[in-house]
Image (cartoon, rainbow, N blue to C red; front, top):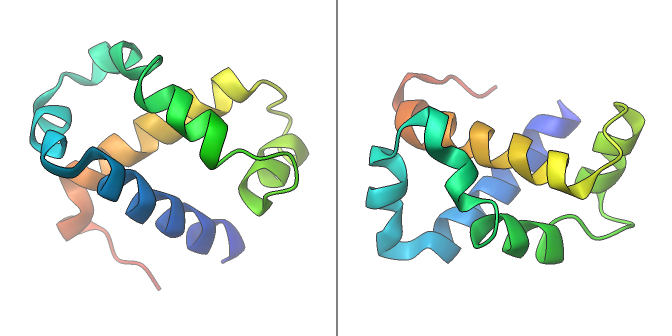
Length: 91
């Protein structure tokens, strides 16, 4: 599936950017992920959500028009991925 490939690519990049800080990220409460809006969220908006990127266009086609919302979705999705990837089957 197209978006699955794009998300996995994005998750790999986010994981690399977080480096050792991924441990802190993974131990955060899901409800507190908005704390990452300025740091990680800014990086996502500036690097992964470029106007012509497949990921950005996917969000636009899905009705998500704001890069802030897009980055929030990515942060929440990455959190779930980072904490539960051993339980996720990617075909």
